[in-house]
Amino acid sequence: GDSVTQMEGPVTLSEEAFLTINCTYTATGYPSLFWYVQYPGEGLQLLLKATKADDKGSNKGFEATYRKETTSFHLEKGSVQVSDSAVYFCALTPRLGAGNMLTFGGGTRLMVKP
Amino acid sequence: DTEVTQTPKHLVMGMTNKKSLKCEQHMGHRAMYWYKQKAKKPPELMFVYSYEKLSINESVPSRFSPECPNSSLLNLHLHALQPEDSALYLCASSQDPPGLTARGQFFGPGTRLTVL
Image (cartoon, rainbow over all chains, first blue to last red; front, side, top):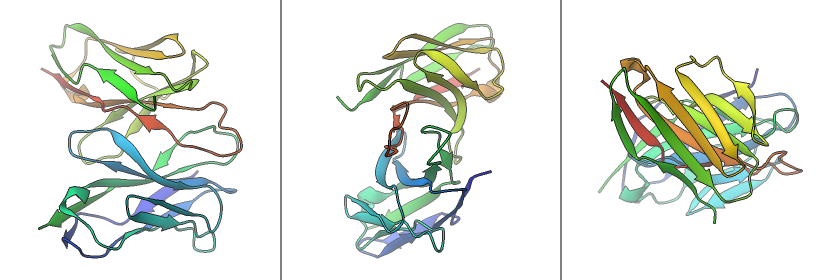
């Protein structure tokens, strides 16, 4: 079956540092890929998405590129802020057959210190 | 309106109580979902409704009973819960069918449930 693997956290960075959170996936066909963010005490927010190979999703300074050759969708941000502290989930939706069903990675907690 | 709302935000109940969680969306989505999320874990799918009909039940115990009164509302009725059912319960919605481009699911803020 489909699966998503994320780097173990927590990731602890100083403010203005560069962020990379690794995400790789296993799926048949051509899935759509998503990053969700969950701030403390809140639900999940869709951060960005990409629906085909070489697409780059971007939002709020975050970006991720759909790399089919490496089955990866790594999340990056050039300069993190304290307010980016949250849990980040990588997820996929199969292109065919399962509607919008999501398969989540385990989540990566990001802590940004002033 | 791109929001999914959930009530209540917090709920404390005893093991003999009956309570309900409510979810509402006005995005015209025809698929709605209930998830359970434990601390430091990703959400676990419980139920999926498609066009107001239950399409997926992920072997959830019968003490959880979902209901979809109309295309905008989703309820989760709770009865005789156990302390291990304490968790964050998330509702989500999405287009169904997804069309040519998957747009993902939109989540509500969740209900934090504590079972004593």
